[in-house]
Length: 167
Image (cartoon, rainbow, N blue to C red; front, side, top):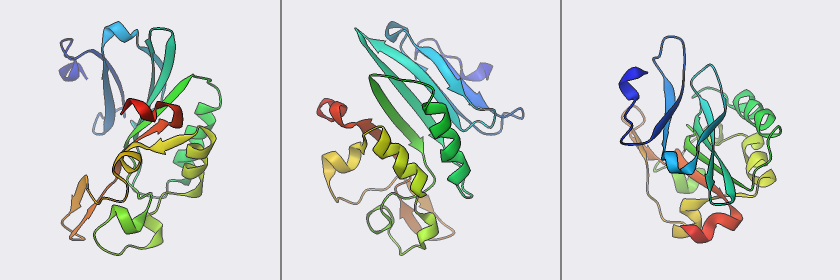
């Protein structure tokens, strides 16, 4: 963890396992008055509240597991239900697909699609896929699997609908 601290980038927030082999880190400018809201012990979730003027935004970093994600997103929904924010941003490595036909170069089984409870979170918080909102059906990818010889878009940013004009 100490290797990650770089005050010139911003205040450091992190979540990692005891072995510190995997995790997630978020840097936030101090001028945004960042405050840790929650994180998990598996290094997969971190939520930081920022304040820009009078607006508070909850920024949630995700490093979703490769295996079934239903419990992971159920846990996220339970955590989110305890907080009310003007704005919510959900970003990170989701290790799954929103739209398999657009988000992967080769045909894939439906099991690579993110679970229904993930889409329930998006709907409940009025979150939209910022890439799709700006670039429509264009195919651009964030991950290459040599094993499957395919490209996928598994790293995404979801914004509340009212925030989309800012991108």
